[in-house]
Image 1: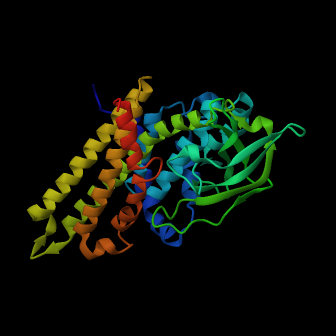
Image 2: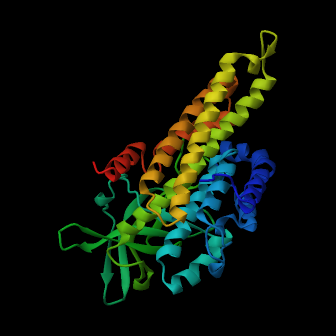
Image 3: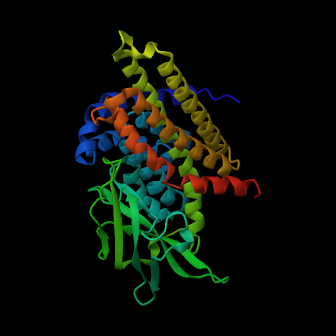
Length: 384
């Protein structure tokens, strides 16, 4: 088993690392403070082909793999998580459902712009009244046979990339009937932006990820053509479980990037900051903190490498993805806390990246499956 990167992956990692340091780092703090979406950064990421990394060239992608996406996410998150989550959600949650489950017509219509970064798509699963319990879905879609349209009513919460000027669509899970066993029949429907009855609420006031786009969505007799059904009717829940399994690897990569960014900033600060006549990095207390942070980031990276390798090999990876996401998100929070401590009072100042890392880290233990859900997934896969 060899976890060293091949030449192609190394080149990608290096190019994204340079982009993050030279393009993202100089401007992201202002976006973060003003809660503005970094359209110019997104445009440049599109030109680099980052939104098309794991997709086939046939559909306008780069012909890479999911691991390539993870490498890009890690390098972006070493500098800023708002930019990284914009890419992760656009690919894993936005374009991937259409790529995996869409008809030829749906792929032809939507994928070219999504894979080029010219447009973004949202993933409408979570609702105001539930998060982890997707069986609690209350949004409903009724097929009007007289017009050949789905009529959607309900709401979704915490939806990333759902309200930007370049958002093209949101895929929505909705109850479309009742299964033979009495359970809800869940299906997935594409709702283009601007559809009458589809309302995007103002952006949330968030603790972190303040330069990313997040909204609550409302559907009030929202009508879309019957052919906007994504995948097989009644398979919406199963489809999104697959998407979430893959997405957990991507979130783990993002968390590793944040954790490694905390190491980077702590080393830099420890070499510059003096106390009692010498750099604080000369003190064993600081050295041990940084060593522990590096150890955690390294082991978390190996966890997502392993999960990604299993996925690409066509092997079962659900448990490994959950382990990677659980471990990496815990490490991200731990490293952000320690980096803030190393920076002292400056770690509490927004002008320092570690303050941003600290605010961004906690959502990694919540989004795309809480840490508690990851433990449930692991335990169940072990037969418990």
